[in-house]
Image 1 (cartoon, rainbow, N blue to C red):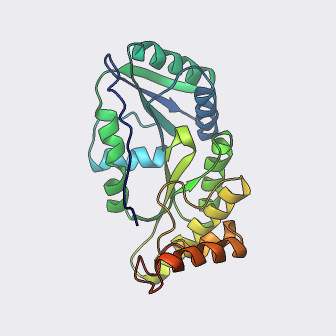
Image 2: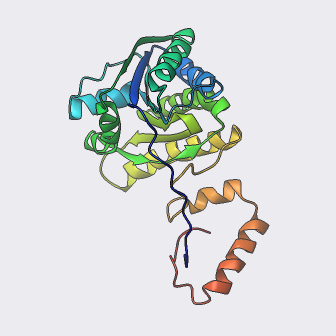
Amino acid sequence: MITAATVRLKAVPPGQPRMFRVSFDDIEDAGRAVMAIVSSPARPEVLEMIDALGVEIIEDYRPSGLPRPQAALLIGQTVGIDAQEQAEAILRICTEHGGTEGEVFADEELLEARRRSHPALVARGMRVSSDVGVPVAALAQMVTGVKQIGAEHGRRVSIVAHAGDGNLHPTVEAGAGEDEYAAAQAVIDDITRFALDLGGTVSGEHGIGSLKRHALAWQVEPVSREMQAGIKAVFDPNGILTPGRGI
């Protein structure tokens, strides 16, 4: 229950924003480049990673001129009066970590392409998705592990990530029917456990809701869940607020 909110507004940064994109032939190199970027003086406003499968699906869905990388595409935006210099510094970092075909430009179409990822993936049968979070230092290991888990299950998995904060959205292919959904969900469950093994969390930004209640028990101890349920009961004794969700 939200009864009041206080917000802080930030001024629009001066200058012209710049977009950048870099292709990678190795997805682990892309993860290491992200770690180097967030550890550098450059501060991208946006830092996203899309694996090769995701780029292929997005471009097949609605072509926008995205280069089709061997492994992953890193895209982002810098802002401020030094946006161009920041973007060029990021490109140099990416090149040092195996990046190829880097480019800086003013057109924001890259962000629009990223926003089309969800409908594009669904249209290609990539229907079961999740969000997990890991420390940025573990991003390279996480993306490699996701691909290995998908291969073990014989399922294609696409990764779209808010790379700058280690928030990944793996999406698993699934046909129609409950059996197909269950098989894809088993892949997501193994990915979630792997994220926890790397010091991550079962949800990077979407929360628990009704679909992750089973996974919450893998991360939060019973006594903590009982305490949270007790607090909720104080404010919701009749259980009418978001029933069947959260704890």
